[in-house]
Amino acid sequence: MGVSTKSIELAQQWAKNDPNPVTAKYVTDLITRALGENGDANMEASVELESLFPLGEEGEGGIPKRTSFGTAGLRSSMSPGPLGMNDLTVVQTAQGLAKYCLARCNIDSSSSSGDKRLIAVVGYDHRQNPNLQISSLSFALLTALVFQEAGMDCILLDGFVLTPLVPFVVQRVGAVTGIMVTASHNPKQDDGYKVYANDACQIRAPMDEEISTEILQNLNPWTDYGRLLQERRENYPSDPCLGLSDPQMTRDMLDAYFTALTKGGSSLKTGQGTIDKKQNWIMDPPKFAYTAMHGIGHSFAKRVFQEFDLPDFLVVPLQKEPNFEFPTVPFPNPEEKGALDLAKQFSEENGCDIVLANDPDADRLAVAEKDRTTGIWTVFHGDQIGVMLGSWIWNQIGKDCGMVSSFRKMKYLWDMPMRRSPQLTSIRVIFFFLRYHSYSLAGFHVCLNRLVFHVGGNCSCGRFSL
Image (tube, rainbow, N blue to C red):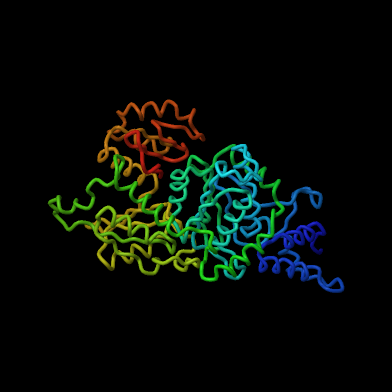
C-alpha cells in the first residue's frame, strides 16, 4: 500500500513553504521516491513520508497532526514536517506568538508608532542537526525576523546564553515575551522553544491554548523568510547572527544579571569566599568539580565562582565545551541515573569532594557529595537542593522573606525552623487559590509551579526559582 494522497499534498505544501532549502529538498526527494516511476513506489520512502506528515484518526479527511504547543512551548526531534522542530515549524510558532502578543496589547501589526512597538527577547543554545542545516541559532534568527515582520522590536542575545538570562532580560527591558531556543536536557536529536510571558514566568494555561490557536491561524509564512536570511548572509558573511543581535547589549545584560546576584539589598553574596578563612577546619575544605554536560554552562559557572570570590573549581574536561553530539551522556539530564558517573570518576582522580552539574542550557543544577570517611557518594535530588538553598537564604540573608512551594517541597520546609514564619503559614492556606497563576507577592511576581524565594520586598535581580 502506497502513501496516501493527502499526505503527499501536505508534504508538497510543506516543502513549498519551508524557508530552509535543505529540508525542503529532503521532503521533495522523499515524495519522488515514495511515488516512484511507473508505479514502482519505494515502500521505505512511503513509510517515512507518512510518519513525517501523518493524518488524524479520521483518515484522509482528518486534521493533519502537528507537534503540540503547551506550557513548555515546543519540544521535538529536529526533522522536517509538522511534528518536528524545523525552520517552518518555528516560523509558524513565532507568527502565532507575535499575533498573540499584539492582540493582548491591542496593537495592529501594521502600526509603526514608535511608542507602541513591543519588545521580544530571544536566546539560543548550541543544538543543531548539520545534515539538515537546522539549529537553535537558525530558529532564533527566524524568530527575530518574524517579530520584525510583525512590527515588533526583538532583542536577539548574541552567542550561546544560559536560559535564566532570557526571563531576566524580559523583566529588565519590559518585554512582552521571551523565547529560549533549547531542548534543555533532552537527547541530542531534539530541540525546543521555551516561551516566557511578560512577567518573566513561563507561559501557563490558558496562554498556551490561546497561542496555539493563533499559530493555527498563521501557518502560511507572511514573507519569504528564506530570501531574507540569504540576503543577510550575503551582507553579514562573518556574523553568525547576521546583524540581528547586539553583542554589547548582551554583555551589558550579563553584567546586570551577575550584578543583581551579588550587589544591592537582595544580594546573594554573603561572604562565601571567606568561609575557608574563618573556619577552623579539622580537614581541608572541600574541593569542587564542575561539569557542563556538553552544554553552555561552563563560562557562566566560572563567572559565578569569580563573582562570589570562591576558589576555582576543577572542570570535567570531556564535558566542558558545548558539543551538540553529547558524546558521553546520550541523555544529558544531570539528575538521570549514571549521568554524573564521569564527573564522579574525575573527582576521585583529582581529590574533589563535591560535584556541581548543570544541564545543557544551564537552568538545572545537580549536586553530589562524597563522604571522605566512607567514600560513598550521595546525589541530592531537586527537592533537597531547593530546600538547602531555601534554608541558606533564610539564615544568611534574613527572615523577611516570603516563600512559595509545592506541597512536595512543603513537607521539607515545614520540618525546618522557618516553619514558624507567618509568610509560610499564610502561603499554605492560599496555595490552592494561587496554583497555576502568577501573582504579586510583596511586590514580586511568582509562578506557583516552582519554588520561588523573594527577599526583603524589593528584589533587584528578579527571581530565584528552583
